[in-house]
Image (tube, rainbow, N blue to C red):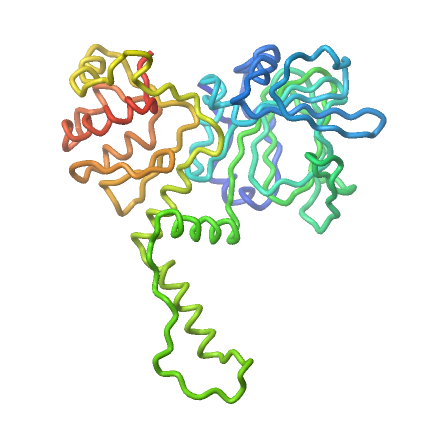
Length: 380
């Protein structure tokens, strides 16, 4: 388990979404949770999102995996990146745990990269918060202040920004952490063969939210009120849209957004849906039957913990103690039980001792068995 050397309250007040921060020695005696060879192996799998970024003679290229081999690569100026590496390597998932002081619905993934000397992805601006932990090796990082700056496509799969003046200019060593909020230009280049682990947190914009909400209405065939004007008066100008008409149209749209139940159903499903593949192996496999509730109970009683699949998104609303949302789907307990929802959504393990104080153990076990049979929790 990694322990974060950070004054969390001070960080949230002075840096979160405000200013970048170098956390020197953020993790003491840091050990990489995955090796470069293991990373290269993952990039050969078709289910896993990977990229290979190279720069030669100031010409950038970016290729998407899976990759069959790496024989064509030189000893410098390239970077291999694995998106959502935490979905496929439980050890990498452990790196996200120290940052759970940030709400889970904001968490995106842990991206892992390996760079040879001179390797990087170029100067760019991200629209998410990221904590970059330096693994083995050293890397030179520059971070500029938030500003209007030109962005352009250095390659069809690689967006860069123009030059910037650095407010952080540092050579990072193993265990150092660099926090970068959205909108701050930055670039990093390996000084020697280096691993980097980026814990990212997303923030959807209004356009994405509105598009997703509209898609939810369409996909679920949800009826909404149609514009009506039974009090219509003769118009003086055929092409004119009057203010009261515009106001009524806006009210019509707002009514859908103000439907509390509908809004929660949409957001819970949307925000819990995995954005990358999960390493899920649902039962039955071959001719193996589903687990029964009694079998799950027996395994827990025998001391076997049920482990949540890395990367699985589980959320619940503070004013609803009966329903949670897991991987884009609503799951409801037989009886309201906030402790049960917290167990499902806040913890990576479920053990027999965790169930002792639940209000409806049988109801929880019934629901939990269905989740196990989906492959969302598993027994080692």
